[in-house]
Image 1 (tube, rainbow, N blue to C red):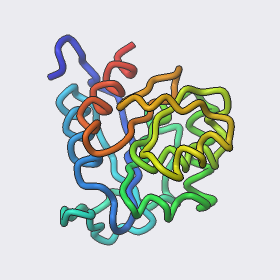
Image 2 (image 1 turned 180 degrees about the vertical axis):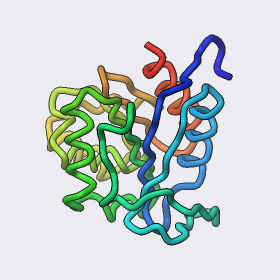
Image 3 (image 1 turned 180 degrees about the horizontal axis):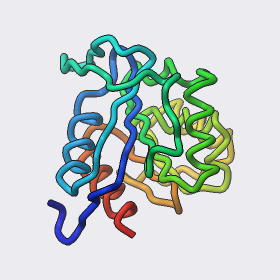
Image 4 (image 1 turned 30 degrees about the horizontal axis):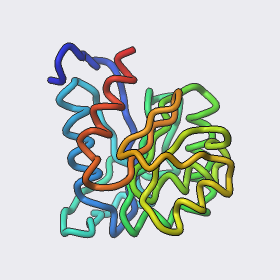
Length: 178
């Protein structure tokens, strides 16, 4: 358990791509949240087994179309190359916008902050993201790129990649405990 945190009763949704999600970003973040007592549900486009970039396999609990944002305290978009499948996905963008609009912790790691940017929730927010073209993607939607491994700005929590996955999970846990 993360010292002093008790997330019993807190529910977290993690959205992964059907293939090529980043293994550590799902598994380490999930582990940190569960260690603190949160219940984690995994969603993807289909309930078929999803495969990570490094070979991890995960069977999602629900399909994106079944997601009810009201059921969760936080929504997390997991990165990896496959996350780009959600950059212009109406359902994913709707989930992000709905979560943010309802005051939920709205989170993304690696390239997935581009999903939040396209959902219109990063304007005026301090954000981090995987480098390269993704910096431009978030800045073009009004975000301020910080370059930090993990960034918390209100209910928006972002991280820049697999190396930050554990700290990302702990940051979300601390935010949920408040």
